[in-house]
Image 1 (cartoon, rainbow, N blue to C red):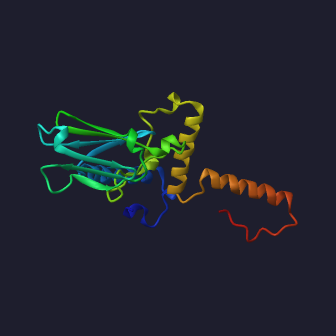
Image 2 (image 1 turned 90 degrees about the vertical axis):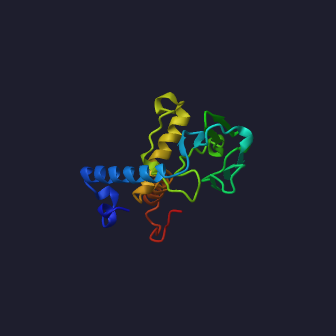
Image 3 (image 1 turned 90 degrees about the horizontal axis):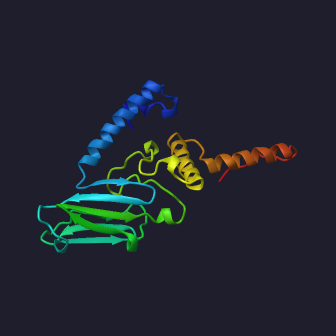
Length: 199
């Protein structure tokens, strides 16, 4: 957390302070991501990882392991992997793939979450690597107006919940529960709700 927000919640900052904070965070994120041995992008269903390789490297020269929650890339001529670790979330390994094109390894990881209608942005590829702020992600490859109404609703809910969590506020599901509790309270004024909790 920056000095700017050390003593003040984000949602209590002025618009100028929020913009300054966001700009600093973007620069920090950019530097952290640039230091990784790979670059990555994502949309709702896939994570794409690109890894620069020595010129002339072919598929037979590389060992790529894609497990349900594990990723490893290693040159067979090297003792140390280029990258190895636990993935942020599960993937469908059978539907994930990799290719080498002009000295670059391209890995397509198929998010399991997209197949169970639980869309999710990844803050990082490997859990031990720096995170990005998923509350600031705006879909590019999947522009909201291009999505069907059901998927668009899920994405908008996900973005809203991410923003709410970042500010320490209730998610949409928690707000619904609070609303139901309030209605129930009004319908039953004779009951004591002083110890009622939302879980």
